[in-house]
Image (cartoon, rainbow, N blue to C red):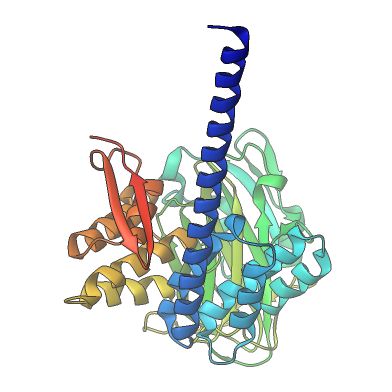
Length: 395
């Protein structure tokens, strides 16, 4: 074979490979843009309903694969639409604020998080020693302040910590993207316990919903009463857990116990009405003393939250709607993981969806999240006029 022939063959092969790469990339772009448009239309069709959060979650996962600004426009539309479910609008507004900050407009991001009512004024103490989740059940000295938190006590209290003596520290300004960054304040930040305390001043007495997000087990006291106790480990996110509470007029003592096993040690805290709208005339401060003179009754009803709403909807679904309902719940869990990571709730919801009926979205999401092989070969599904081939690892 002559040198000229070998050179020609090599050039042909390079060209062929380049053509295949470009064709695959173009096909992938077309597929992702189609999926984005399908989810966008689905989101707008569901406006006003809590299940609108499912296509919102799908859109957020596609942000890197669609033209710049496409997602921002949708987030604006959902956040500003008065018909939107308040909890869905909050998710849209939160991620719009993240996009603002990532785009270089930190002031717009900060305004977005403040508008959601996310608290950014705390005093923090820790870390205390804990192994895994064990710290949730252990009593540490700061819990004695759950119902009474005079400033002179906070200034002088000193306790043995995980590696050294610890004291209360003002954590004003140690928040990013609406969350208190405990990992930036405290070390070690694994297998540890910390407490965040703030005085919540309310313009009037009445019912409210306390909404939190955290990476690990969490216990919360409001005015000396335990209002939330969750032994779960998951990535932190906005509005993962909710508790119906009653705020007293004036100052309320909020004490949050947070346990970290590993990962990002962050804490989201806000108060809303039952529907999920931020409460007016509620603000946190560190500039005084608050003593609870009498306990305030805790409401008996469960707080409204997206996770329980979509899970109940999925469990109640029958017939053709069953597959879509469980896919919706799985999508939500990718955005707001309120179940323990050990439960593999997303994978379980997707398998239930696929048992009812196969869909490209359920298959592709399962291929992403499944930690173990799920079937053999390739699964081919057609949605609209576009064929999808999803590679699944063999058991």
